Image (cartoon, rainbow, N blue to C red; front, side, top):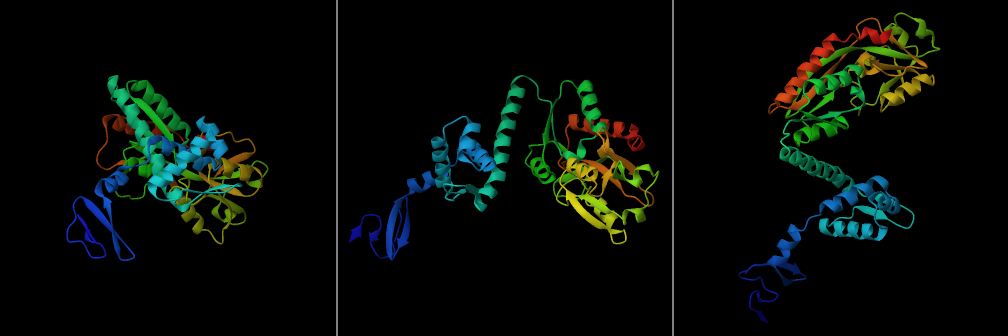
Length: 345
C-alpha cells in the first residue's frame, strides 16, 4: 500500500515532507511535524513551578494546597500536568505519603532559581520604572551574622540611601550559583577558595576561640592550651557548611594529638546549645560570637599557633558595580576598627 508521503509502508521512506517517522515493529508511522514542535515548546508555567516547590517542601498535598490558598484537586491536576510536560515523575504518592523522586530533587533547585530570577527581574523592572536603578543584592549565611557586619549595613544605608539593599539567607553553594546566575551581586563567606568565575575580596579577619560551658573549669582560665583541648570532646561545624572557614578549624584540630570530635553542628545556634548542655568544647571565630547571648557559655582564647578566619566578600570576576565597591570599602574600614578581644571579655 502506497502512502502519499511515506511511500510504501514497511519500507524505509525515500523522503519526508514536514514530518517525523517512528519505527514500531518494522512499520513506519508518520507524525505531523507541528505536533512535535508543539510538544517541545510546551514548558511548565510559573504557577506550575510555585506549586511544585511548595509541594516539595511540604510533601503533603493538603498542607501544600493550604499554603497556596487553593483546593487540593487543582493542585493535583497541576502537578500531573507538569509531570506530563516534563515526561518524568516528580513525586511518588500513595494514600499514606508523598515522596519526591530523584528527578524531582534535581528539578527543585532549578525551579527555585527560576522563580527567584523572575521575582528579581520583576523587582528590578519596577525599580527601573521608578528611576531607582541602584541596588545591591547580598547573600548571607549563619556564619556571617556578625555585630560589625550589621553595623556595615546600617552605615551603608545612612551613606547611600539611594541604593536598595536586598539580603538573602542561603548556603554557600547556593550563593555561588546565585552570583554566577546574576541573582546576587555578592555574598559574605568564610570560604575564599578559588572558584571559576568568582573573585574573593578579604574584608576582615578574626581568631579561633573556644566556647565552654559556664561551669567548666576552663571557664575561669585566662588561656586554653591546644594540649588542653585534646583532653575534652570537641564540637566542630559541619564540613558541608560555610561555618568552618574553608576547613581552617578542621585543619587546626588535625594538628592536635588524638582529638575527639563528638559532634558536628550545622549552625552556630546548635553548636552553642550542645556546649551549654555540656557535650563538649566548641571552636568558633571570635567575630561569630559578636552580639550573641552567651548565657550558660563562656568564650576563651586559645594559646599557641591558632589560625585566623578571614571573612570574604565573593562576587563575579567580570567586575563590580560602584555601589558594591563602596560597600567593600566600608566593610574593610569598619572591620579594621573592630576589636575582636572585646568579645573575649
